[in-house]
Image (cartoon, rainbow, N blue to C red; front, side):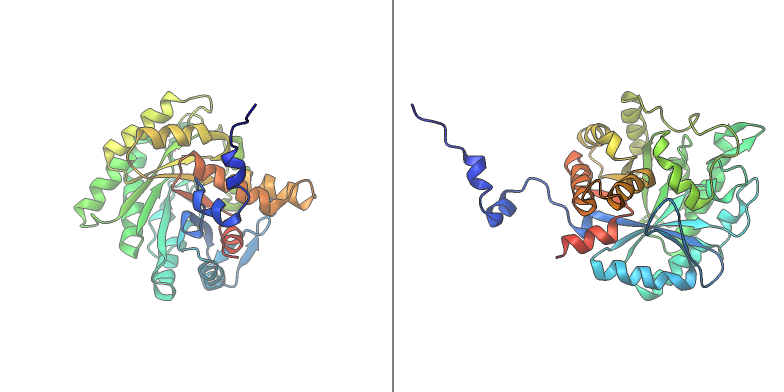
Length: 324
């Protein structure tokens, strides 16, 4: 009795052939490095819950930018941490704030970086919410004005892509309208279209010192049990003028990444968030897993799910490993 020819097994015998027939590739070009930019000078502050991740003052940025560029990273996503905060997040509109100044610094030193900027006011407010508040109510529509002005400020400073992460309804249209009105028609919008109210954001909130001071963000971020809402949010943001759609977090929402990528003709990004990063680092440091192997495996899984670009704190380490 003859047996079927086991072609897949034969294909695996040769590393060169494996590369030729590989279904999903992962390269530094797919990775975006998030950077925390803070006020002052001489500051490189470690984040205890995120090993190897730091807050950088403007003068310390060149070292990480140089490391990332040498590793093959070509895109960064900037988050700003102001010196002072208030109820309305007014520092988000300061042209001398950390993010606008960092954009200029990067442009002067590394003009070919693709610069993306986070558009949200949680890190600029004393209450830590992504929208303006009245009592304990999140005010959606009044928030749109500050978000769109923040996006315009970053575009004027030289950002290539603005990335609203607040999940306020209508913010993509508000931002697109103001950008176009001011002749920034080429500035792209990477919308956090599908952002779940997740337990994986804890280390990020330590990094940004931006945890909500009352309640939580479930009134404007998505229920983690939802699928149809995710597709609806992605469709609405596309209709409002988004150029790229983001799913956040990534690893617990691979199915959502796939569904969004299958139902939209826009590029899809995914954010491997702080909690996902920190869990892998913690397990690796304890010797429970091979950290490098799991790092590449999880990033490849996100690509396999349908993400064309990945925001990850592993960007530099992964790019170095991929470049070997």
